[in-house]
Length: 156
Image (tube, rainbow, N blue to C red; front, top):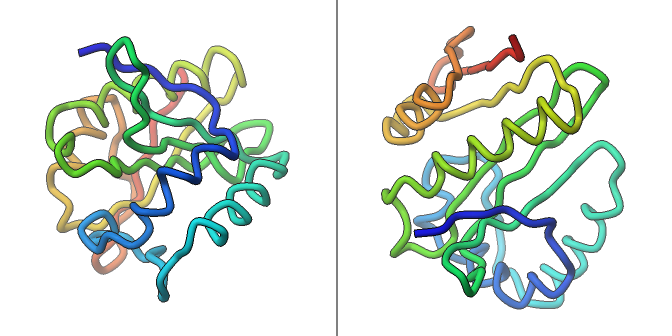
């Protein structure tokens, strides 16, 4: 299966708004929506985040058709580092290694294009599959706070 990332565009809201209403997608995150999200709300949210200078957001796409199945992004970008986020929105593709591949692609982008020194993330300590994926990509745990791990990868 071919896996690629491309910059998010406003038209992606026509797909991603459904994911915002899926509790499985947000099981291990604190950033889950507290209300039903409409396509209009998702479009407005996407419009706002795409304008931010210190964030870069990508669609995770698969196969030759470039089917959009999730998001990977860097936020809080500084000269040295950024925070990493990812989710697979299409349930049937969870657990297939796509997130690991997308993570590797965004790491390459962060280190080779943005010239960042570090990428960090926060992950629920119960999300064992995500932790294994991050470790496979080179992230190391640097802090543990209650149910959350802070992991980091350095550009060596």
